[in-house]
Length: 136
Image 1 (tube, rainbow, N blue to C red):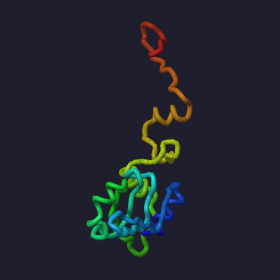
Image 2 (image 1 turned 180 degrees about the vertical axis):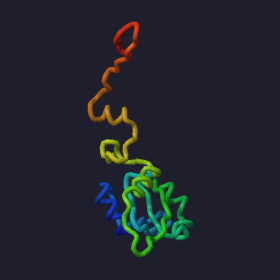
Image 3 (image 1 turned 90 degrees about the vertical axis):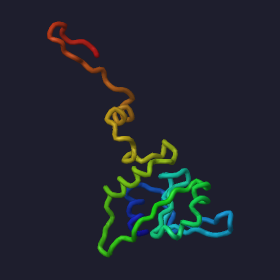
Image 4 (image 1 turned 120 degrees about the vertical axis):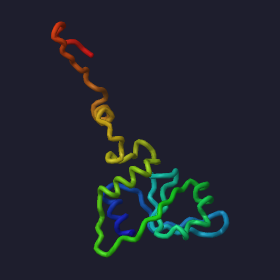
């Protein structure tokens, strides 16, 4: 699992800590395969293979600003799939600083993309058979 997350980190520019250990106020420690920063909750998403590892700590994790996801270990021969990772990360949502947001995670809005690249949208011309050209 960690190998695929490392591949995703390099490909998509993710901030990843693997493994990640979090000491809780109770004195217990939660270990996640990786922690994916800037997605999901304010402090990122903890990835584990088994929910039972987190179950007793869910309230404390959420209170500390972490989200979590339980993902199966990949099967032998499974390879990193960029589209699947992008879809999952978009589902979790961006929680980092907006100026650090990767291009691929930005809203898929053509107007947004145009404004980000060029500042403003061009005026649109409409044709009316009786009037000739006019601005919309």
